[in-house]
Image (tube, rainbow, N blue to C red):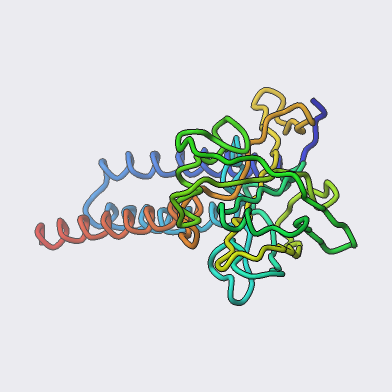
Length: 277
């Protein structure tokens, strides 16, 4: 694999921050056991402050995930919000990744439609993106009826047929296509616009618009990120949650958890102080 150093500095900074915080916190906490009441209270206030500040540091550092799964975002516009789904044609979308998936290489678009939408096709589905690129899709896989089967790839980032049917609100078979797009340009935090035209005479056309890509794996031994090659498996995708459900980033979760923890520690300490008085 070819190696590149994108995001290594951020990864290192995060690791160093965690180690420094751990040493400071444990040292301060142990020292409080041998101090008087007044000085102990001062120490506990400092510990509480650390717990409040540390998650803010983490939040400012992009999260570097080993696999990058679920960091691709597709944002529908106007009437399509908040579903990355076509219900009329044409439809315009934005695609990007959150910090943990920047950059994601070898982007592929994953389109999934209902049986009625497929039967109503009168021509090829086209995908146009900023810069003049165009993708024409005339061949479709399916019908898919096995709910346990994973598509378009049979690994951890594949979607089960059952979940795709659920997102499309259908019990019937589904049809899909999986093609490279954006001219191979990497997905980054900068949004890229693309438009899809769906020539279907179906009364209620529905087609999911998802994407998959490849993100480099961080090598702990060399301190570099390994650049994925065409032969590597896909390891990033649009989250498989119900469309419209927002999954918080790890930094946000840590921020909330540490903040609550800080207030809890301060509350317990304050209660003990009042009791001793």
